[in-house]
Each structure stands twice: as C-alpha cells, then as structure tokens.
Image (tube, rainbow, N blue to C red):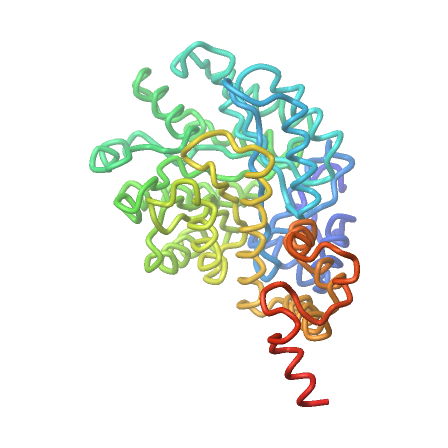
Length: 429
C-alpha cells in the first residue's frame, strides 16, 4: 500500500509512514496531529520515492519555518565542483532544502551529484531544462514539457516548481506593470503562449502533471509566474488573478492526493506583507506558503539578503511556512560560496525569529542557553550555539586571538574594566 500512495494519500488511509514518524519526532508533535495536517493538505513532506537517502522534512501548519537554498550553475559561470561546495556550506549551516536552478549544459550531471551527496529534499524548475533543449522557448514541444517532469521525477527530485497559474486571460494585466514578468519560468511560459496563441500547457494539461507527481510522490510547488518584481507591482491585479488560479489548482491536486504548496511574492512593501499572507492562505485553503523574501525595498542592491530577511521574518510570523533565501547578489549575478553563506544565515535568523514569535515548541531554548553562556563568559558555548559558529569564532578572535582570552570575562568591545555583565556579577554575587 505504501508504495502506491503519496504521503497525503497514506495519511488519508491512516497509514503512518517512516517519513511521518521522523518528521513528528523532529518537530516534537504527535504523529496523529501531523497525519491530520497531511490529510488536509496544510503540511507537505516532499520526499520522492526514488530519493532513497533523504532525511524527510515537514513544511506547513504548526511546524518550524523551513529555509530553502537556491543554487545551480548558469550559462556564463560556475562549475559542478563549485556548486557542490555551495551545497556543502548550505548543509553545514542548516538549510532545510536545496533547489537546483541550473541552466546550460550538464543538468542531469549536477542533479545526480546533489542527489547522491545530499540528504536534503531537492527541488527543481523543470521548464528550465525543457528550455535548455531548444534554441528559443517558443520551440519547446508539448511532449518536452511533460517528458522533463517525468525524467526528473524518475531521478528522484522531491519537489518541482510548475508555473501552471499564469494563463492567457492574465496577460493584459502585465502591461500595467513597472517591471513586467520577473519570474524566469513565468517568462518562458509567457513567450511560448504568446508565440503559439495557446493556453499554458501546464494549466491545460494539469491532470497529466498530477499523474506523474502522484506516481513518484513529487510535491508540486505552484510557481508564481506573475510575482511582483518591484514594490510598484506588489499586490496588483496580475498577481491576485494568478493567485485565484493557483487556489483552483491546489484543490485539483488535493483531489488526486498530490502534495502541493504555493509560491509567493518577491517584492512587497512591509505594510502589505500581512495582507498578502492572509490572502494566500484564504484563497489556497491553508496550503503551505513558500515565499521568495519578500524584499521590502528595491534599492538594497548588494544587500538584498537583508531586505529579503526583513520581509521573510514578517511573512513567516504572519503565517508563511517556507522561505526561499535571497543572497547579496540578487539582481546582480550568480552567488558565490560566501554569498550563499550570508544569504542562508540571514534567512535562518528570519525563520528562527518567526518561530519564536509563533510560539513553536522549544524555539527559544537555544536563545536562553546563549544568554546564559554570555552571562557566564562561556565563549566556546557561545560559538557552538551560534547559527554560524565559524563566523562567530572568527570575529571574536580577530582582536583577541590568544587562547587565554577564551577564559576572559570581557571582549574587545568593552575591555576588562567596562563589561556591564562583569560589573553586574560583582554587584549581585
């Protein structure tokens, strides 16, 4: 029975899978609570049946906020070894999932390397590979759109971004925008639709997508092809009309027992984030919400990981479930390993802050332990509790590198005479 059903299908049958047991244990929640959320579709466990070395991750209602790391080489730069080093850094710093957004040559090679090396759930955008096989997006055949999904499912990809919500009736609303279509997958679909004067094939033949995903238990991540790429375009009619279509597709996926989550906006003013999250949850009936940022300003070039982390913290606090990190190179170029580090840690901070705000069980224990270590001048403990222990140690040792300073009751900021914690301890002892 377990081999024939998705995790949602198993939950509806009352079957407790090993993946469910692991997620319930990791999240410190009863299995029956997790099963209820899987049944209703408010939680997903992206875990392809072919991905045998996966450590399952739950995403959705009442669970810890998860963080995804995008990586992948481009047509102009990077190589396989560099991308694998990025994956290693992401795993080391606590990424929950990896998305391979590679374009150019050797796409199967890089996916195979990640799947064999990494225990994290792997996501892709299949239309990138379909586009890679032709000279122009308009030349993609109907068979290619779906053959790529099946091929990647057979390889073991756990979740796929499918841009099925951008349909022909939405096209007129794009003309009112300042930055048009900023989704790479959305633009590919749009060019195909405009050239052929046909409906989006992922929408028109969505049942075929569902059949493939059900067979391998691939979680569909419904792509927001019309996500706003600027504050000017945020919450506009194009975005909202696509969201309505995504809500319809969520229900169709659930009707077939296919796990599904919904991707959300990229640039949103701070004061509109809560409304956007509420609207998505309402229209998509509580399906897990996966947001890129959102960036709360358009002028943070070189620091977009900060602009994105601010929006991500608010979105997650308001109910988003899954954060796609943004690096300092967003809008500027392909991120290197240091960019991956900075982007991931910024979004881990955002996720953790939201977990505390939402009252997730055990979320604040690490913070309290860090505070005790600080008050006790336990420097080694402080390093180990940090989200990036290597960076914390390096910053401390930059000015006080000698081993004896690991026992000192001060850092180089206040020195031995003016540390307030040291003075406080002398007063209250």
